[in-house]
Image (cartoon, one colour):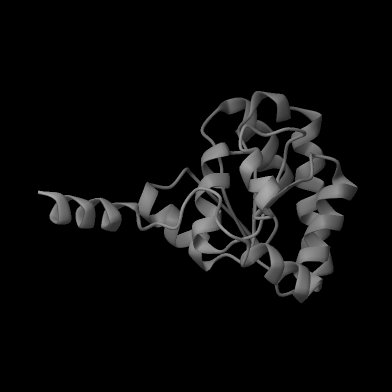
Length: 162
């Protein structure tokens, strides 16, 4: 989480929801790369740093971050870029905002807008972790941002036409 619109109470609500989710699922672990902005860190660390099943890290380099997403069950984010990348990995994404610049993900069913309300974040996360059909529907939805094979098609086109 990093968006200015989520600083303060909205972010605190999400932190409480994360703790509620962990109470509901005793085997779940959360890895949370924390944005370097002090406005974010001064909320996240006091709320979550002492929880034994939450790992708070500094922001990760790209490849380790993609690897982490690949190993994740689902993703909670307010990041537009992550909304674009998660579908390529088959990871359902809950968007911690009221609106998104990536409506394609919402329309395709790879992501869902949940906002920052504690009960909404908790409820939608519990639903995805408990309802295998809903989880599979989101995980298998068609990636609205492409199939990852654009470079292969470009090479084929160049070889066929040059």
